Amino acid sequence: MVSSNSKAHGCLAGVALGDALGRATEFMTRDHIREKFGWLDHFAAPFDAHPGFADPLGVVTDDTEQTLMIARLLATGEPLTPERVAHALVESARDHPSPYIGPSTRRALARLIEGASPYETGTQGTTNGAAMRVAPIGIVHAGDSSTLLKVNFENVLRDAVAASIPTHNTHNAMASAGAVACAIANAMTRDATIETIIASAQEGAQRGRAFGAWSWATQLEKRIELAVRLARESKNLDDALKSLYDYVGVGLDPAESVASAFGVIVAARGDPMTAIFAGVNLGGDTDTIAGIAGGICGALRGIEALDQKLLREVERVNGLDFASIAAKLVMRDPISNIQHPTSNFQND
Image (cartoon, rainbow, N blue to C red; front, top):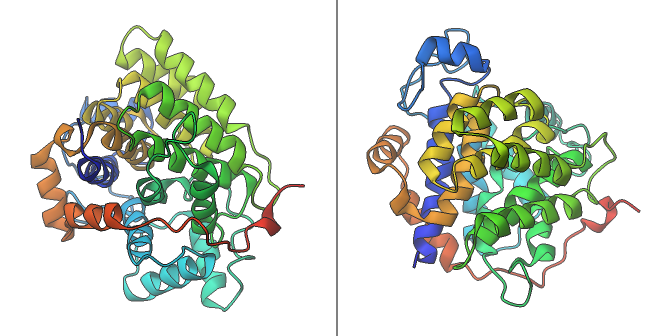
């Protein structure tokens, strides 16, 4: 049996490994990756026009940076609010400027720094930046024996919405944050399976879409269904990746990259390293796809299923200790009775 600490540790490590390994192939097509790397299963430098071309091998990007930001906010035991998230984002941008900030977050940050309300700054954020950072929310809300899928959707979505509002306050982004956070909350349970994880993600996507400002939003739960079906019908992993690339997509829209991450999980049969390498070699927003897939599979299988040598290198290069952060999240007593003003963003 995989312990809660191992699952939480595996989740955070899976996000970081997918992010750090996927940095090398980010923005590349599937064909270009094959031409340059063949099958990439080690740290490598991205192409020379990439904003992090000169960074050390193994460095993480905004996916991990913002995931750990949410983890630190949750570890205090205080309720997660849009105000706290906005403050942390602004502090991070001022103290540790990063070249790895996506378009929605960059646009929102500029307004936050000017003093705009965090409830207004994210109303154009339709990309996958909300989904990439919610893994710690799934960890702290792990399991709930009173529900069929063992996910307290109300509590998970409350925090996923709060984490998203300052930069990604739209139907599109909220659905993706709900999908990933609920998938991890289920993966953290003792008897989780790929099937229960997918069902939790689809439920989280459907419920999450009720929050945020109106935006064109493909029904993410249906796109996840498509990605899962394509993965299951494929002859092998490479065939699955081709189908996901061709028919689901790998761009910043969550209906592409987030849905494809769930297809990768199915194609990898829940194995974290297979899922991470699959995401790295898929093309498009590879660091986010590999990070989401790695985080969910890491929560399912635990830290023992990840490559320890690669993990040690990521921790060394970035000065991180995932075991310590994971332990703090597992020890945190989730606050389930705190209400904060997300109801104004529900779709009537």
